[in-house]
Image (cartoon, rainbow, N blue to C red; front, top):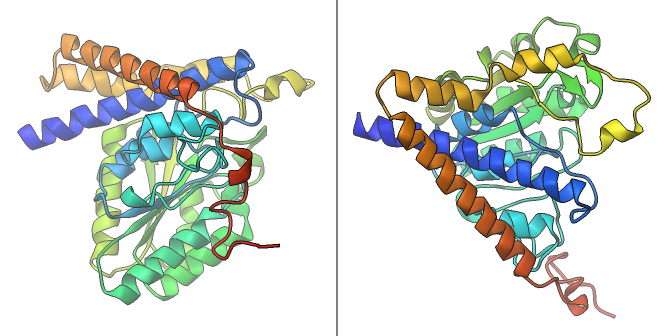
Length: 328
């Protein structure tokens, strides 16, 4: 039980880290300290945390434009992440990648991108490398309901199934691709139903329940690691905020009902897990509150670190951008 308790508490801490990190990002955007696009993961924390808890440190993940939650769930450094989105030299990509391009190869974070569905072919390539090298590393590729309609998504799933590659396709179905409901763009009832076309398991899971996501991910990882091939997981979840910060200011009319948002807020993943911990006697309410306090301090320190960090030097503009630097 001690090992399980450690995992359950780590899940809580990482969900809270993601939540507080992205709440801070919202404050930075609203205060005009952070410019450019910022896509928050608020409301979806259980998906990345539940899935990454099923992985080893040397397993891989690929993400997307909603990119802060995935690295933090995998164990990334919030100081480097915060510095990166503020464009500082101490960031993951030395301030050159920004909010949508966090990567940390040392713990299997292969990178994220604002190009829809672009992480899936990368995940398939990493899974192919794992198989060719004869190791048992697996890859989880996070993508959204909008990306599920991209050709790259279907090409990736088809190839992974043909070659039985160790990859898990994890669709974070947060109901909307920008402002368009997935019900208007997906012909099947569930995105996971599409798995049958690629001869792989398709699993629909409650994306607000970190333990349910973890259980489904464990099964998919075991299947991948044992050479049985890929799985398509669909986590039904919800983003509480808009597709990107500031989007609501340019819309002419609302695209979703506030009552709908409130219904999903009643199933907050952090509240669900916190209540479960207390009800099961895994942790006291005081211990849960202590984690929240510690997380707040951690993110506050990360923000201060980022603010005090220097910007990249102009002469470093081309550094790390090319394998073979362009010379004049």
